[in-house]
Image (tube, rainbow, N blue to C red; front, side, top):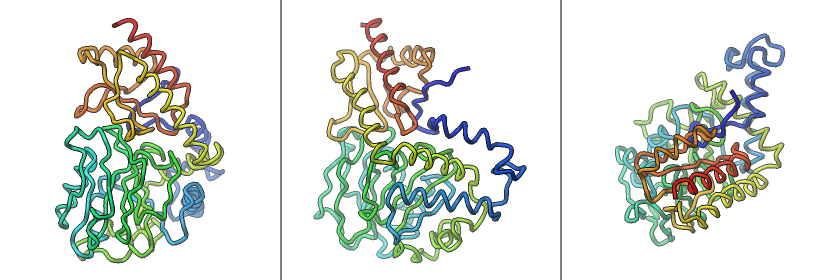
Length: 359
């Protein structure tokens, strides 16, 4: 069958060029007679893969030399525990609650230290990003944690808060590599791969050198950042194939012109959908305009009885996984880097036809 436009929040669509490159190398990688899934993670071939993946990511994000790039397992959710265990100093941290994943991070962190929820958008069902000012931050906090893009709620930080000397920690799972950021503003960045990087099972951690080596005695070896830093992410068998696909994605991003070019493309895709919703009397965006994500766009129909019909007819039109998260309802279009503008235009065209049919 023909490929569809996959609007899933994750695992999300991968660039077709990446899949086709992986397909040509699937059974015989660089004349080895083996797949990447079969070669040893200690081999020269894989050393080249993981080294190139790191170098490409450093180049794309302009990561300073005093930051380590770690490729770990367990998903971003495992970092909810790893972060308080590794950055434990005074036993307290500031968290900003902007939705489902923030709440899970807060719940996990409370097992290991005192959590101060310095701001929240729960009062308006997480439809906006609360303002964070320096006076809200405890100068003795071990770190400040934010979720830069909220996959479920469709909100995103447009301005990165100034946390002074307190390290800023960010879950960037759903917007990493989608727009330019200044890595030096953060002490630690982490991201699950399954949205803008590669297959599920891989997590990228970008951490400033001075934050490594201070883990709590209770921290398991496999959650200690020093374990992975000292071993070059090869302490145990890593997610070898996921790292290989990530390398191909980084190559693809570089060929497209890098993150600045991707940001322009992503903003155009988002504007195409938001502008259509804004002029429509049939659809509505529940998110405050100044807080809207360019990666995850939820929208609603006044008559919620039509939600299931919308998803069904969209699927028949080759537009997959548009059902909103169960905690929010409605619909959601995740338009990560790999989603072409053609896919967004096809969605808008379908939405227009559906609106005319059911108005």
